[in-house]
Length: 417
Ligand code: DSN
Image 1 (tube, rainbow, N blue to C red):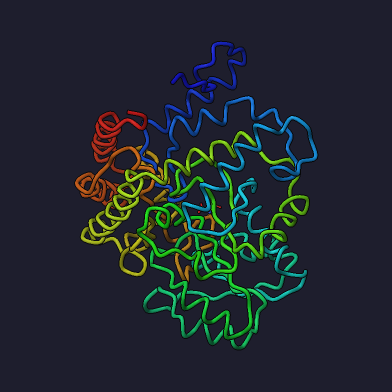
Image 2 (image 1 turned 135 degrees about the vertical axis):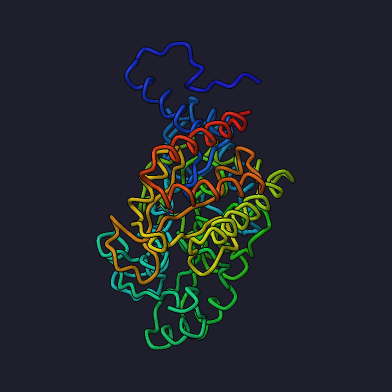
């Protein structure tokens, strides 16, 4: 198969843009990507996004469009929807959301009226912007309240969540996080929602690939609506998706289009279809298991090196390091690791006293480095390098040595081998 990727296209005239794209491709190749929400999509997924489907307007849904000439994009969207349903065992799927936040907006619009009460995880404890941040549409239009982790364990205590739900009587309970390293008990959340007569939604953006790969419990049997992104552990194109039982799909579809979006991105939907097929393969199950094994090994290695891991470790792809435990802010730690080509992001830790732009933590994830073939042995080395840099962030000899080791590893494990 010849891939028609933009990078291989012969008619490139815009030197400025292509130079930046080439540099970004090189950056990804030479850096170890530990940002927990990023991954390296396959060449086939990327190729689909550089096709003529980007030219096509297709407002509506397959068989019911507001434009002519949709016969082939209808086929593509049907493939994507059917594969999504099979992959996650969901009765219905909407594959049109441009992002996770767009998916959440449509989900909320399908279930809530402005001003309705919602209970979701606090952003400061690992929740997401679109779960009620005051400047986000969610916090502007709905009455969000938050639950968080417990001070001692830094884990969710479902009895406490239940107490809050009983006191608040929300219309919707949301589970799902961007920086929570422990399994989420979807059955317990569903039972709490039922007890207070609320609807239950799960935003599984971070763990979608782990759910698809069978290494995290699926929220689909428990939730009224499940939203996700397709580009994190699921390793597809940048975008969102909604899963739901058949009785909810009419409202969801109409909340997404025309409620929150116009024309769908058909080139991205084609890439989603390809990614869902990839995620149906045995090799993806192995990948998901390796992501979790690598995260566990990395957390153990860092912990053995004396760096405090929030909640003591991880059961999924993500971990939060309390870099205050080695005298750094999250911002300083992010910068120090960047100097040796290890990319991550500063992150608040639960009960953080620093402001978000400084933070006391960094968040690390293993989805992208596992895609490029790193294994648990590599995790031992990586933990050592991270520890050395965090302990000696200004030491030029350490920086040079670790940067050299990172370079040797990234050369040995190219992204697109
Ligand atoms: N979900 C966020 C992250 O985890 O990086 C981005 O919205």
